[in-house]
Image 1 (cartoon, rainbow over the protein chains, first blue to last red):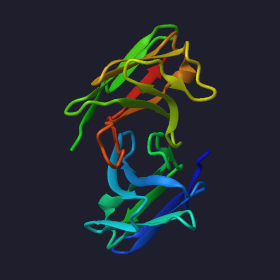
Image 2 (cartoon, rainbow over the protein chains, first blue to last red; image 1 turned 180 degrees about the vertical axis):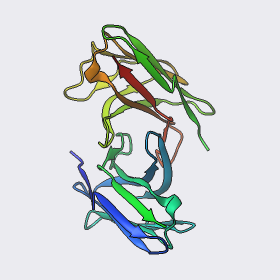
Image 3 (cartoon, chains in turn green, orange; image 1 turned 90 degrees about the horizontal axis):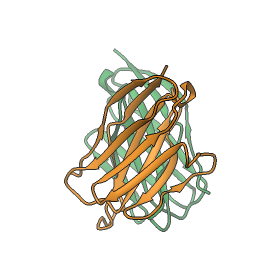
Image 4 (cartoon, rainbow over the protein chains, first blue to last red; image 1 turned 30 degrees about the horizontal axis):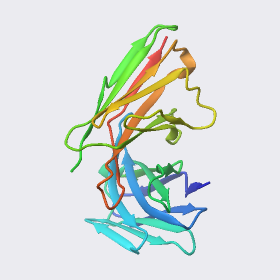
Amino acid sequence: KQEVTQIPAALSVPEGENLVLNCSFTDSAIYNLQWFRQDPGKGLTSLLLIQSSQREQTSGRLNASLDKSSGRSTLYIAASQPGDSATYLCAATADSGNTPLVFGKGTRLSVIA
Amino acid sequence: GAVVSQHPSWVICKSGTSVKIECRSLDFQATTMFWYRQFPKQSLMLMATSNEGSKATYEQGVEKDKFLINHASLTLSTLTVTSAHPEDSSFYICSARTGGSSYNEQFFGPGTRLTVL
């Protein structure tokens, strides 16, 4: 059964810093991996989706990488801003692609102005 | 992009009453819908998977008689929390997947916050 782990659980950085959030998964036979953002009391905002055949995806200041062999994904945020403060969730599906996303517990990010 | 809506966005009810939450895919047909639950400062936990026209598949530990799921059409799934109790207070999020997506991407609703007094 797929298990997703995210470290650190919480992170506080000054504005302008580049940062990396880590995600690991136990079953390397994944179909795709997604990163989401969740603001307090709100729903999920999809940030990036990486298919199993891809190694990375980029959107603006965000870059997500995927290394299936090591069971890891990272989310890189460049030039962080206070508006980036939120919880970032990593989720993966199993190889068949028909199974639901399994979520990590998230990393709670605070960007201090 | 694909849009999923949920109604209501929040609900407060008395203990012992039943609450129905609707999940709709607005611009695509969802062959599969998922219901997740999220407690404060916790991650999303899958409750059940439902395919249109068939019975839902519940995760271990989720009572199917308490959390009734109906997926009668390709654009609508409902979750009914029967005889709700304070411990059922949580954030309920649905997601939908179209069988036509090559990425098998799941699209998420905005969530429903349930508070049981």
